[in-house]
Image (tube, rainbow, N blue to C red; front, side):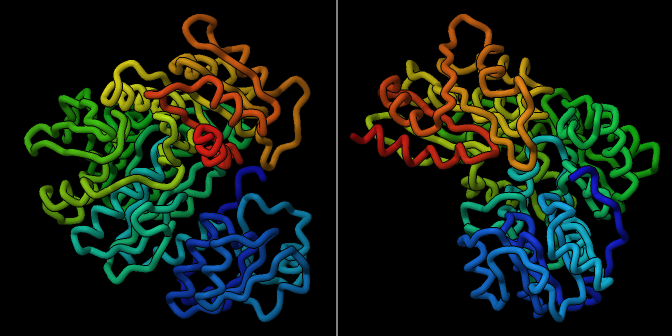
Length: 466
């Protein structure tokens, strides 16, 4: 689906009876969960059952497996995700009945209305930063409502209704729908070219973030190290917003002495003190600092926020440990953009250096979307050169049809020949055996991508155990 049609959100109490098409998705299920906890009648449908579907049913939702026009009964509002095509029979029936049809982001804006809203935007780091802020606020007793694009390790949930006044949400720029949100406080971690299948060119991405600034109520928190975020900060100042910056290069919250600490990271914020995280990577030090800035802006003491962040153990699919066997540790990452691959591979090197010193990093990468693979093949190749060995799967097409000449082989061919050994593995089922034949004690294996590559982690652990 191309950029969504922006609509003016309505208050949650005006939604009436709500039906979600594609209710099992991470973002859709989270909003449905919050509405159910507020006593709203929720129905929905999805192509298949899942644990999320089961949880929603236990909360009182009526959910159909499979899409059919007959599922649209006694409904006032229909929520659709960007994965739903115009040919969907439920969407067609909703339009025929003249029902209110809104995208997921409009529904999110509705449940955020009336709260102190904090939205985390950026090309990378949104899920982790939103999760960090949520956990820190929870540990400080603020009990926020939240909606994250992944699942917190601490709760196993991607969204929930809290008793506090704060609502923390991940703001998704992929389809432009974050322009439906109107947060009081916003974080922009970075702004880079991505989702060019929707935007067309990098300028349109930057323009979208500039429009996002116009939606912010009072404060923008932006990364001083990122040129795109710095542009957003300049636009916010020109508009009269208060701007708080953070980064290694400078800013109101300046990081220093960022260093690996076992599987975690330790750094100092000048003028405040040392922060210790239980997750690896210099990029996570930046994510944590933006979360600290947002929490302090909400009135919480730095010391309490710092202590809360120390308990953060990650979000699902964000350098998530999948197991260890034969001295080889296996992790899984949602990284699907070159910058994300590079950040996680550097973090993996930090972890290896902390533990064994002579271990290697083996990256298993599944490109996501044919368009993204075509746009960023060279950049993916350069990022994978940070691994000692790289295994590239075929493209996970998701919502896209195959493109002639675009495959995982394209990415594998762009990895600079040298220290990195590269293999193209179009047969995904062969990967566990391939990894087991190559990995040795002290190595880290990292599966990477937004598709079903995540399923390989347990299979690799099992193969290594034999």
